[in-house]
Amino acid sequence: MKVTVADSDLVYAGHLSRVRIDQVRFPDGTESAREVVEHLDAAAVVPLHEDGTVTLLRQYRHPVAGEVLVSPLGPPPAASWPRKSGWARSG
Image (cartoon, rainbow, N blue to C red):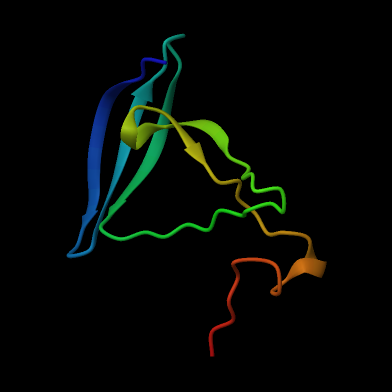
């Protein structure tokens, strides 16, 4: 998928991150605003199923101008919190 950046506006620049709003144009001619956060450090939790497989989704991500594999977002069923998830209580 070829997506082009029509305009980009830097709205914040700090020591650890930058935030910009890009106006992107898709191959069909439609345009959309994308909020992009650039940061130095990140972490992700990828659930490992009992059979050794993982679940990933293929989604377009504007900052890399292409499709990437991502972990599904959202909380697990309430019954599995926090024992079987990557969630950790602070404090």
